[in-house]
Length: 61
Image 1 (cartoon, one colour):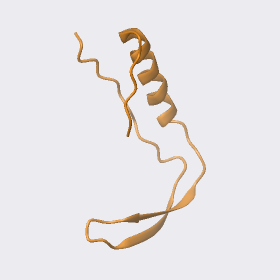
Image 2 (image 1 turned 135 degrees about the vertical axis):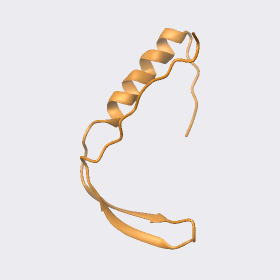
Image 3 (image 1 turned 90 degrees about the horizontal axis):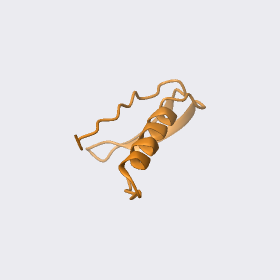
Image 4 (image 1 turned 180 degrees about the vertical axis):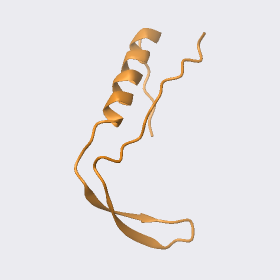
Protein backbone atom coordinates (compact mmCIF):
# COMPACT_ATOMS: atom_id res chain seq x y z
CA UNK A 1 0.00 0.00 0.00
CA UNK A 2 1.24 3.48 -0.71
CA UNK A 3 0.08 7.02 -0.23
CA UNK A 4 0.15 9.92 -2.64
CA UNK A 5 -0.47 13.61 -2.08
CA UNK A 6 -2.66 15.73 -4.34
CA UNK A 7 -2.76 19.49 -4.84
CA UNK A 8 -6.43 19.65 -3.87
CA UNK A 9 -9.13 17.68 -2.10
CA UNK A 10 -11.12 17.46 -5.34
CA UNK A 11 -8.18 15.88 -7.19
CA UNK A 12 -7.68 13.36 -4.39
CA UNK A 13 -11.36 12.48 -4.43
CA UNK A 14 -11.35 12.04 -8.22
CA UNK A 15 -8.33 9.73 -7.98
CA UNK A 16 -10.00 7.67 -5.23
CA UNK A 17 -13.17 7.29 -7.31
CA UNK A 18 -11.15 6.25 -10.36
CA UNK A 19 -9.21 3.61 -8.41
CA UNK A 20 -12.39 2.28 -6.76
CA UNK A 21 -14.00 1.87 -10.19
CA UNK A 22 -10.91 0.07 -11.53
CA UNK A 23 -11.01 -2.39 -8.61
CA UNK A 24 -14.43 -3.60 -9.73
CA UNK A 25 -13.41 -4.39 -13.31
CA UNK A 26 -13.20 -8.10 -14.14
CA UNK A 27 -9.85 -9.50 -15.15
CA UNK A 28 -8.24 -12.81 -16.05
CA UNK A 29 -8.66 -15.88 -13.87
CA UNK A 30 -5.24 -17.01 -12.68
CA UNK A 31 -3.45 -19.26 -10.26
CA UNK A 32 -2.36 -17.59 -7.03
CA UNK A 33 -0.20 -18.67 -4.10
CA UNK A 34 -0.48 -17.34 -0.58
CA UNK A 35 0.85 -18.09 2.88
CA UNK A 36 -1.61 -18.43 5.73
CA UNK A 37 -1.19 -17.33 9.35
CA UNK A 38 0.37 -20.71 10.21
CA UNK A 39 3.05 -20.27 7.57
CA UNK A 40 1.59 -22.88 5.21
CA UNK A 41 1.50 -22.16 1.47
CA UNK A 42 -1.63 -22.67 -0.61
CA UNK A 43 -2.37 -22.60 -4.34
CA UNK A 44 -5.77 -21.86 -5.84
CA UNK A 45 -7.45 -20.37 -8.85
CA UNK A 46 -8.62 -16.79 -8.43
CA UNK A 47 -11.64 -16.04 -10.58
CA UNK A 48 -11.24 -12.91 -12.69
CA UNK A 49 -14.85 -11.94 -12.02
CA UNK A 50 -14.58 -12.14 -8.21
CA UNK A 51 -13.92 -8.45 -7.65
CA UNK A 52 -14.27 -6.33 -4.53
CA UNK A 53 -16.82 -3.60 -4.13
CA UNK A 54 -15.11 -0.38 -3.06
CA UNK A 55 -16.76 2.73 -1.66
CA UNK A 56 -15.29 6.15 -1.04
CA UNK A 57 -15.80 7.76 2.34
CA UNK A 58 -14.95 11.44 2.63
CA UNK A 59 -14.15 12.27 6.24
CA UNK A 60 -13.29 15.90 5.54
CA UNK A 61 -16.81 17.22 6.04
